Structure formats: structure tokens, C-alpha cells
Amino acid sequence: MNSIWSDHIQGVMTLYLSRKLRFDDAFWDQYDRLFQIEHHRALSILEIGCGPGALAESLHRWYPDARITAIDRDSRFIAFARANGKGIDFMEGDATNLPFEDQRFDVVVSNTVQEHVEPTAFWREQRRVLKPGGICLCLSARKGLRCTAPCLEVTAAESAFWDRVSQTDDVIERYGVGKYWLDEAGLPAAMERHGFSEVSTGYAVIDLTPDAPKYAPEMAEAMIEAMRENDLEAIASAHAPDAGDAVDAVNAKYDERIRLYREGIRQWDTTVSVTMVVRGIRK
Ligand SMILES: C[S@@+](CC[C@H](N)C(=O)[O-])C[C@H]1O[C@@H](n2cnc3c(N)ncnc32)[C@H](O)[C@@H]1O
Image 1: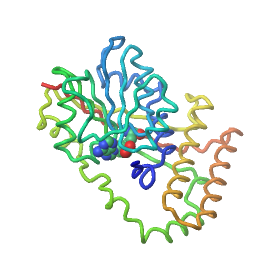
Image 2: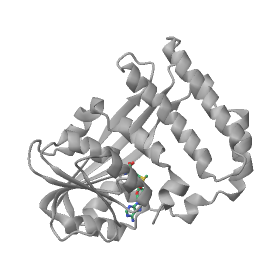
Image 3: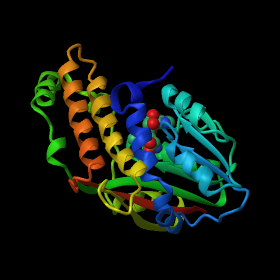
């Protein structure tokens, strides 16, 4: 069993809830324009490094006639994805050695995976399993915006916790997280260098502002709860014995944020995430 990512880097709920928001149907028009995948065709689509499966679930809704396969090497993510994402083939496996025959898929897609995987194998395997003329979509998080409500500022108990654990926190280096990160010019250039043509780039801008009237209460509260899970799983992943004060502090501040939202007391805190979509065709 491999659970390196879910144990040490990002927890199941952090990834699942944040991606469920990022790939919500409210933003489908932006992805649709960038993906340029034919609707209602019996396509075979592979997601690489799918994590707990939120993007695969969206692809399943957006392309109802497509067959979606999704692979990740983290066993816990795949177990969670299988329990949630009905109608999708979730598999454990390695992006650098995909367990599929040559030219099997019409579309291959990944989100925030390229920067963690050795590039020669990452691109080679996608080219290999794509049919000639198939579409490669590489999605990558870019610098967004974050404006925090006063009630969500890091508390003294959280600061004290992170001061205690930070001396031993070498997770990023130990697991090569982000080791192959490329900038906005480097990413399309890498796709071209690795044998893809007609490469294009574009950006999806996802505005997550709970108080914005365009969002229904369920969506607004989901934004707040995704931030809560992110903070709680970050604390849990430090594997520190004395996390209780920090956990209580996190829960108290998000409970307060929910209360303010429900009482209509606006905070206008916001997270705007920018996803770069690089699209190329397998020659
Ligand atoms: C930042 S997470 C993104 C997960 C998912 N795409 C999402 O957006 O929620 C990176 C993912 O890549 C997976 N991963 C890293 N290296 C991999 C490899 N060589 N083969 C398969 N998956 C890999 C990790 O397990 C993790 O789920």
C-alpha cells in the first residue's frame, strides 16, 4: 500500500473538497472552452494522478458518453474515489509506467501532477497511451489571490503548534513535491519538446467568495468547510502528539465564519484560484 501523498502531503478531504469546488459545474463553461473535447462522443478519457477523484467525477458528468479511467499511486485516494465516483474506473498505478496498451485513449488529462513526476516518463507515457490525434490536457495551478476574513486569521494556538513542528518538517524535499515545476512559458514548451503539436494555453479563473450573492448557501458553506478541512488535515499530517489546542482553534474560527455567513454578516473573504490549461495533440 502506498499512501505517501495522503499521509504526508495533502489529505483526502483537502484535495477532494477543494477540487470539487474548483471543478464545480458553475465553472464548466471555462473548462469546456479550454478543453475543446467533443461532447456526446464515446471517447476514452484517462486522468493521471487523479487523487480522490473530484475531477474524474466532473468529467463523468460533463462527458456522459465517455468512458473515464483514472489512476493514482496513492491507495487511500483510490479507495476513497472508488467509494464515491460510481461509473468511473479508478485504478492504482504509476504515471511513469502506465498499465495500458499503446494508443488506448482519446484524451489524457492531469491536474497539478506534472510538477511532481519525472518529465521524460511523464510525457512519454501520455504520448504512448494516446491515439494519434488524441488530446493531452495538462492542468497546473498558478498564483491566485487570497484575502482572509479577520475571524479566519491564524490563531496564537495554531502559530504555537506550527512553531513546534516546523523544525522537523522536511516533507517537501523528502518526497520531491514540486521538484519539476515549470513556469507559464516552460510548461507549453515542455509539451512541444516531448512530441505534442498544436499546443495552446489558457486559464480558468475560479472565484470562491462565500459572500458573493451568485453562490447558493450550499456552495458558500462548502467553500468555508473546504478551508476548514485543509487546516485540520494540515495539522493531522504533522503527526504531532499535542495538536489538540490547534484543532480546537481551527474549529472555533470556522464555526464563527459559518455563523457570520448564516446571519448575513458579510466578510468578503475570497480565494481566487487560477488553473493553467495546456492543450496539445499527439502527433
Ligand atoms: C497535487 S496532487 C493532485 C491530485 C489530483 N489531481 C487533484 O487535483 O486533486 C498530486 C497527485 O499526484 C499523485 N502522484 C504523484 N506521483 C505519481 C506517480 N508517479 N504516479 C501516479 N500518481 C502520482 C499523488 O499521489 C497525488 O494524488
